[in-house]
Length: 368
Image (tube, rainbow, N blue to C red; front, side, top):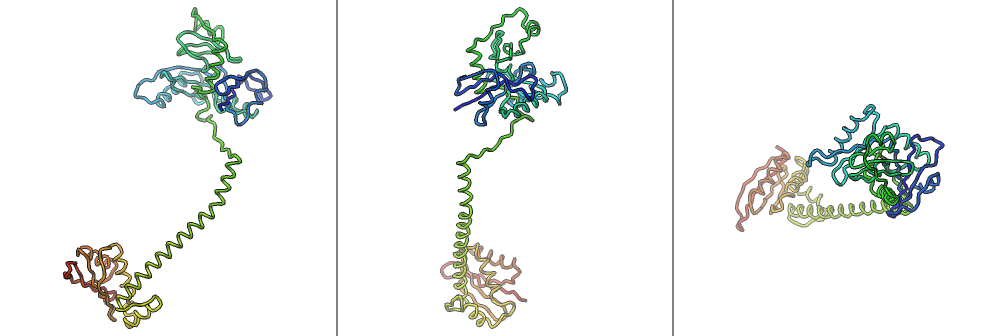
């Protein structure tokens, strides 16, 4: 349900002032209005609040986009600069905002920063900070003929391209002998409803933009509590999965190690007997023993899935002899080059097997 409360901001906000003109719009219909302080009963946190800035304190100007290729944001920036430069007062004391309407016209509103601060401070003190601040002059529906309207205590006159406060001397000097059409009560109500739904210009921008507050409801708090309770369970599940993967990898490595050790010994062994059997076979740990070159060969073989070991032996002088086979000799060469990059001395004799595979009889040494 769209529920909006519009209220007039006073020209001179006073701390003890509470009364003002107000309008309550619900689902596109003006359901109530008045003047007094009862509007504060409607100014709850769940209702959209729009402040109406006095026409006398907000200057409106109009311009057209200079180029069809210019984006709306670029056109608005140019219009703001031009409006501030043509205004009285120093640039640093002024606040401006621009918006492109549906027909391509750019409306720019300029006011004093001190006025914006005073309006917002007054509303905050009453617990009714507006989410938007709309100039009273921007409420007037513009046409090619002069029109006038009264929004609470605000009287405005304007036509397409010009809007100003309806003050006798000012109006006479600008309109002269022109005819001014006064909006009917129903048209005024429609203008207020339109402002509640889609105001064109909002002065709450730049340094005066409202900061978003994160409101967490009871249901969301319960959801957050459930998520917080699930975090340890997710971490535990992740740890169990990691342990499972580690055990699978360990089992695979154990199996491959047993296969390599069995090939080197010429007989099957177990994990418990592999180390002692290999030590007995090689007769000690000359030049660092078998495990270092054997591990290096195994690591070099990992990226080359097409290369297999057909024979493996180790001599007490620290020489590991290995026969490698592959469909192409290039794959075997990459294994040997990888061993050389790890500072192993490698010799290789290529040959062709009866089944057409490329074979290399190689030796790998860690010593001289």
